[in-house]
Picture 1: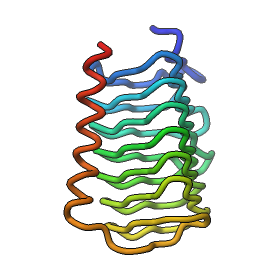
Picture 2: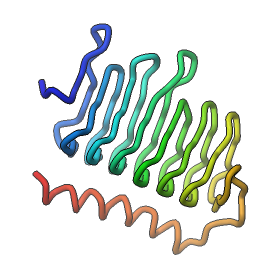
Picture 3: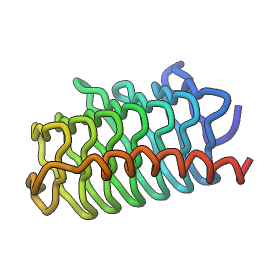
Picture 4: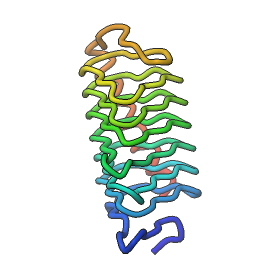
Length: 169
């Protein structure tokens, strides 16, 4: 086992064989990472108090932190791009979302599928963002519905990060 994959209370992270795990990234405890995901430099995913699940083709970019709460897991579905320096705490991110750099999503928040959360957003506790929303600000507010082109671009962003990760293997 690698030094950056750390069991916690007897629970070993479950990481698909084709996941890219960059240097300085730490995966701890009850964490499941699905196929073709990429976890970038200096990211911490800490499943010490409740499970964390990361979907296929999802990328968690540099210096991001993901945690859960004793009573609420963190779920990040497929084809999600989590930008640099993001904090995700005990929340649910639907498929095909883009979480902008420096954003914070707090406990019990739910982000619907096909959403863009703009850079620097703060999504407060218990906030539910409807599918297909563009959200900006702190606290985050829905600005408009995303376009079909933006939905395609979100998916392409996730695929681009997967392809980029292949150069590091």
